[in-house]
Image 1 (cartoon, rainbow, N blue to C red):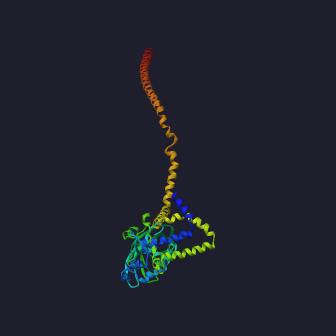
Image 2: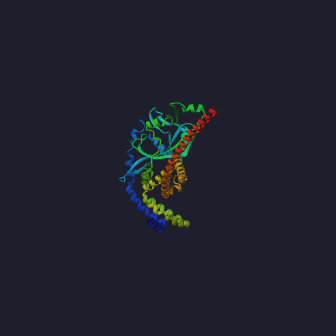
Image 3: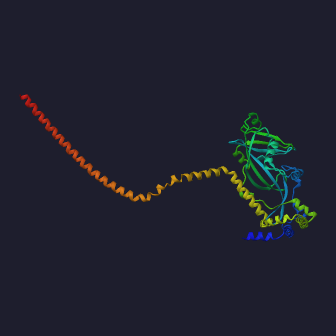
Amino acid sequence: GAAAAAAAAAAAVPLSVQIEHLALRANACEARFGLDAQRAEDVLSQLKIGKFGTDKAKTLDQLSVEVQTGSAQLMLKEDANGTCQPVRVVDAVLIRLHSEKSGGRLLVELDEQYPDGRKFETYRLPGNKRERAETPKDSIQRLISEKLKMNGLTINVNYDKTDIYTEEKQSESFPGIQTLYCMEIIGGFVTSTDIGIRAEFGLDEEEGKFSITDAKQNVRTFGWLTEEQAMGKQVKLHGGVFGMLTMPVLTPVSAVMSQVQGTMEQRIEEVTKKVDAIFTRDKKLLELERHLGHTEVWSHTEPSQMVSLLCQDFAKRQYIANHEQHLRDFTKGLADVNRMEFCINPPGLQEIPSCNERLRRLEARSAVATGTACRLHDTVAKVAEDYHKAMVGLNDQILRWDALLDSKDKTK
């Protein structure tokens, strides 16, 4: 009803006019977010530059390389008060690698040592920061070949089942920068059976370890731990639930700094002129505009709500994919129950109440028959007793007769 009416009303407004109206909305956004050059300078001044390159912290040059390669982005995050703070956004892909198909031990990064000698414990799953235009599969393959250097091992990686979660905390690598990590955990297991190659990576040892030096001369030590040992070291092995996927409202710092060269309203006016020129050259765009008007209602949805809904929908789909086998087993169980329904509640069982009267009559007849049988038994017993007495008496008489005949024979 209301959504359809809004879509119909939006369809009647030309796209060029709608773009002009964006200028007013842009001013409102600038006021709400505080997106201006002065504000950007204030928030970026919170960086603790003096701590870069000390303890676990990396250098400012390394941060610059991260941003240039796309493995990290500097964004402004809006808080509950409508103001912004700088955040470093990192898309990371981790591998939950087991030593064998049936499970076995898990590969865990134990510690890392920088080229200048600084060393510290890490205890985390091996992972990579995704670079610009890199897929999770590309990142995992780069992790296996460059960081783990396991090209000699045969590894089975299941890219279809992943755990995804987000985590926001202060970055140890870059002090003063709040970092939002978007993690994706992909499972896999080692299938190699070559004893020499397995020994190279300590796969069959009780506490197998191995060290790898990367191209930047960072030395990382990896070990094979049981799941209990990994959890005891606070290693995060699985993603979170739906609620951990909500994304805040983020704005690239580059978009804020570009306001020095012109306001957002001025840029939108330039875009409006270009759009008008395109519409003048190609009349077919009017038809496209009419169809796009039906989607205008979606533009009124708050971005944070839309991102949250999309993330939750993706998480639900991911949950179903991860538990596919359990759901299939459950469906099979339901089918078995449906097939057994005839045995559990057969039609004959429903006729039992109507048989009560017949059972009562049979019980009465059985009682009568039992009484008759008892009386017949008594009569038969009496007849048998009389018969026995008669036979005993007859036998005595025959014996007496036999004795008389013997005595007569002797007298003769």
